[in-house]
Length: 165
Image 1 (spheres, rainbow, N blue to C red):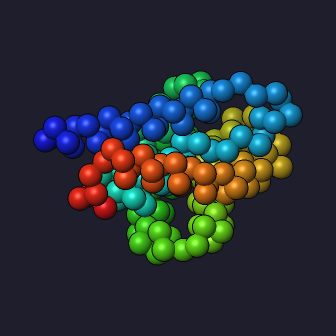
Image 2: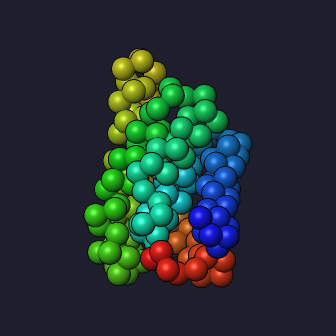
């Protein structure tokens, strides 16, 4: 692995760390259900921008870190993140060329699917959930997508080489 590739992985990993920190950021109970799926958004971006480097394994790993950080059932976020990466990979060329509002619509549905294993595992364990929270997180994720997209694109253009895209 060349020095550039090594540096690239650190920058990608740092963006996931920031997403984990944003997820851990305490919010009032009323706003908790509005929290965007930060890790999923970062994963979706990197799967679209650098599909040769970031894929299902990276999504699975990020999901495991999220499971460990939130104290949730080990593997539920990992399964959702792996599923999201598996959806994005074959579609990344099509989604990248869409206008921002259409990308947001696509992100809404990908985050919606990302949450299915989480909802399913919570249902099996009889953990009560608010149905509106299941819809609000994909909605706020779709709204935040242009900001996440442009921020991560700026980071990629400044610090990463473009040979992997």
